[in-house]
Image (cartoon, rainbow, N blue to C red; front, side, top):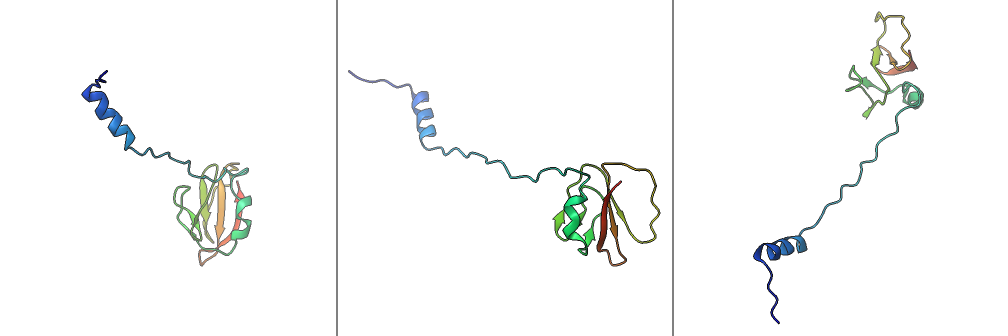
Length: 104
């Protein structure tokens, strides 16, 4: 008894036999903050703050996680007095180091 395999099926079987399937492992992501993000920054007091928006602000070399807008407040900056629960306020000193992180 002879076995006849169609050329297309044989080619597909050969490709599958030599193909390594890469399984993408999910990248571990940090959990979103329970507040605006201020509580997680208690240990960052004194570290340099760079950037000005939620997308680019860093403390030291670490990106900041926030539920909403991030506002960097330098000495003498005028800011609105409205309270926005999800907004993270990063107060810095004249040298650009974090002095206080708070919601509002």
